[in-house]
Length: 419
Image (cartoon, rainbow, N blue to C red; front, side, top):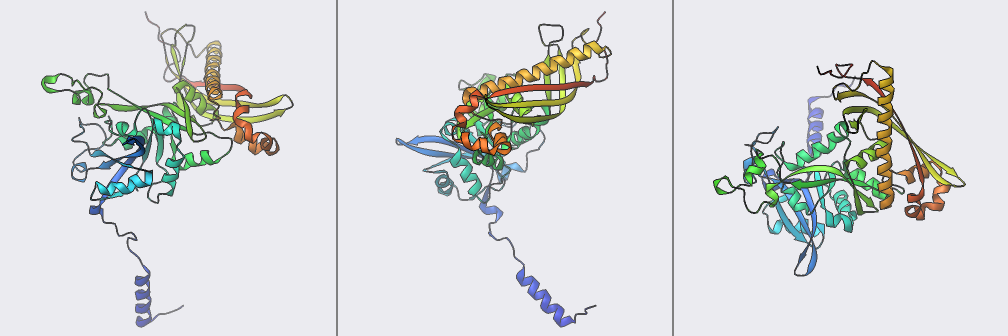
C-alpha cells in the first residue's frame, strides 16, 4: 500500500487543478441567442439570387412566463419564440450576416428542426445537409423536413400544443411511426447516410400550414380584427398552424414529388419502419366500417436475380387488434369472420404498398432502398447496373405478400346489436 505524505499530495492536487479546463469557447449565456429551428429559402435581392436564412429563436424575457404542455392562447406577440431572417450569398454567409442585425451571437446547439423551403428542395438539399454536418453546434439528431411554400412562413406558424413550433414538430415526427406511420421523420445524420449510399433515395416529412377550421381555435381568433370580425388579410403566416402529411421523395439531392399519407404508410411497411397505425376496412359493406390497429410489423425484402430480370420479394408479417366496428358487422367468435377480416387486412396492406411502389417508380426514386439490398446480396450484379439503376428501377418486379393476424378485439367479441 502506497502512503503519500502531505507535501506530495498537495503537489498532485495542484497538477490536477492545472489540468482541468472550464468552458472552452467562453461564450456567456447573456451574449447568445438560443435557436431551436432553422429555415432555408431562396430569395432574390436586386435581381441576384440569395439564401434566406430564417431562425426561430427564444425570447429570453418572455420564455420564462410561458407554461409548457399546451397552447394557452398565445399569439405571435406573446409566443416564447420569434422568427428573424437574414440573407447571404451562401448559407454560411447568411449565418455570419446574423451579427449585422443582432448584438448576440447565434447559438445553434439547441436546434431540433431544419425546415427546407420547397423551392430549395427542388434545386437540391446537398448544400443544406453539408452545412448542418459541418457546423459544430447543430446536433445530428435535428430533424430535416420540407415545407409547402417558404420555410420562413412555416416557422411563423403557431403550434397548438407546445410553446415552440420546433418542439411540437420534433415530437410529432418521433411519435408518428408509433401511432400512424403516415410520415417519415429523418434526422440530419440519416439524411446524410441516404445521400451518400448508392441504391437509396431519401425522403423527408412534408409540412404544410393552414388556418384552423375550428371557429373556437385560439389561432383563428388571433386572426380577428377589431369588433371580432376576421381580418381581411387571412393568409398571414402568423394566423396559421401546421400539420405533417406524407413525405417528399428525392432523386439524388433534388425533390421530385410527394407521396400522400396512404402511399407513405406503404413505404413504411416495405422499409420495416411501421410500428403502429390504423387500417380502415369495409367488412360486408361498400364503405369502411371497421378499424384494425396493426403493430409488431416485420418486413423482409429479398432480391431475386434471374435471366429475365431483377425482382424483389417483400414479405410483411404483423399482428393487431380490431378496435372499432359498425354495429352488427363482425363476430370475432366466428372463425369465418376472423379469416375474412384477416384477408381484408392483407389485401389492404398489399394495396397500400403497391400504390407506394407505383408512385416511386413514376418518380424514378428508389425510396425503398431496393438498390442497396441488391448491392449487399448481389454485388457483382449491382456493379453492372449501378450507373443505370435510375432507369432500371421503374421496370423491376416487386412481389408483395402480407400476412397479418387478428389477435384481439378489445373488450368486445361481437359488434353491438341495435334493438
